[in-house]
Length: 288
Length: 299
View (cartoon, one colour):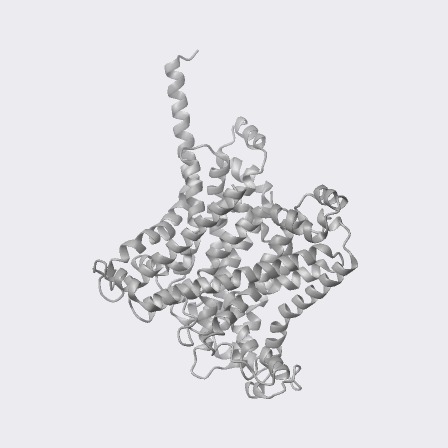
């Protein structure tokens, strides 16, 4: 059962740390925090400078005069807003569809009895190990034969084929007591009712974790969107921003502004739903 | 009363019904898994015996792609680079993440703040992380090179040097991945049984001994997931290579996925790309199987 409690007193934590251990820990953590955050601050500083003044040495961290030209150019001369909307739209579509399909499949695996269940579960675990990046060539042909290349469907449909979400929700459902759905069935509830009115309300945290995981996966994906869609106005954020680098003369100021703004949506999501972002939920999915 | 015959018939009918219900619940997800995951894997094998297909219809070429795959020195190099990169990145990111998880676990004040900051790079797409690192590594205005100039006196050409480029890409991936693994290991540490540690402390086991003889063995399930998952993800490395070096300099950062992408879009040879993809799938499945076997035996 995945943990959701935050700040619960942890077992090991309760052992007293020696002062030396505390000191070493804080030094390490401070160093890690600085390394984690400095690149973000540096591109913030770069994005507020005229590209020409970038090359002066030593650099001034806080530009004397804030230069907003990079941001203006990003909004006026590139499809940045469109790319952001594409990413959000495609991500929400995938997340919604996957929540429905994966809950249904996970319900069958966790709560229904049918032939070949063990075999199917093993098959799904095996599919987890397939490197998706190795499938771009055949996927390109499958999607092309459906006539969907360079459409939003090309971004949405293949992303629905990921077994991890099913296994994750299954692990949440397996840990629910059996009596609940048994008694509902005895009362004459259909399986659909058992799923939607008993099981799903009880695994709400699991659904949020699943949604975040699915959305993040889409938000960060790059290779398939690069292959599937060519038109500039249909690109997702990652592909759109990378196209800024392929110009003959690289506009560093523009790229820094775009990179910085691209971190905002996911940061907002993270700050709002922080406790669901814990990665151990993923590892729980793969436990039998 | 029902006769035996009727009883059996009704039971069979009920079984058929539950099977059908289960299938109905599974059908939508399975349809997508088969069409966009299982079928592409199978068609890799079929495509590996064909050439063309982008502009003109594909035609059967027998073992031509396979012959090329085994003779092309760049294929060998791409697989070597991919494995080498994984060998650099995975142990490094695990060691750092474990140190940070232990640190987070031993402090009380500020745990949440540090956790949030360390997790922050993990949130970003690796593509954005790689773009950000062009500002860290750039010879003229990269922050790391500004520091280098202050310490060593001259900037280092991290991405233009054939022996430095791959380790540099590994560094970027470690920077971006460390938060994920730190939180995973921290969750593992916090789930360990408290009594055992008190007993060990009373018996006089020092912190180092407790770490090596209790913590590491107890975290075996976490490590199993970590190694398998990290292997699957890292062997597919593409985004950071595409942004930072595009395979160069002198092919020193050509990875398997980069070569697959180029074979489809630059060289227009999907049959060859499919063959290479098939090799990558087999490689990943093989390594995953080996890891599963190794962890299972000692459990």
